[in-house]
Image 1 (cartoon, rainbow, N blue to C red):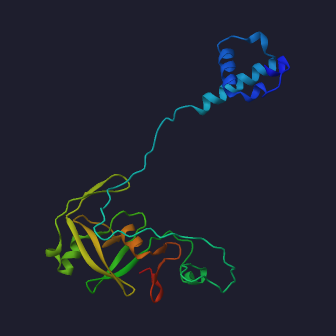
Image 2: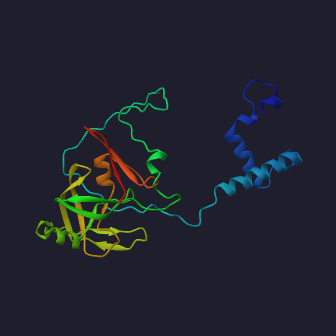
Image 3: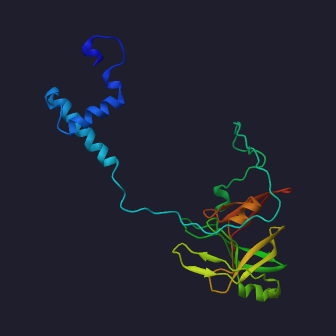
Length: 237
């Protein structure tokens, strides 16, 4: 328009609203005589692409989430993390870093798809076949294990429905807090007690992993976490 009248200002193609209105009129069958064949093809292609972009999806897959626990202990303030560039050398590792290397996995047959299963101490009793599961939202223990520990009377009644990946449900019998010892580091840990059978005696999920500030590696079949005495390493059982 400005170009036609010879006045100064923005180009016609810079006006988005005007372009949309012209495209609408063109698609309604108007203004055909004012467009060249190339312009007509451009409008048709543009309209077809817009319809494809706005096509509704056939299905929607929502994230599967479970219930969350309300923290009972003190609330910790968030820690501000700053990232600085360090000059690295082959033998240099910044203080407080957790890393894994191929030398630590020399005895592990590769390739593999094994989960990380460890042994722990519960109330000074060794419990094997404990799964470390970063995908788990809760810590779980079998009722039979609690019975063998002789701690049935410490189970607190608390019903909770746990959902598996395939939405299979399991209702808990209660919950129990036990002193969990891993590599000499003891932490009181709350477990949800289940009656049903599972492949493992207990499952350590994100609540325990995050509280320990642990980093797990199924590839290297180990877990590491920082303590006041340095880095502790827990190997697969």
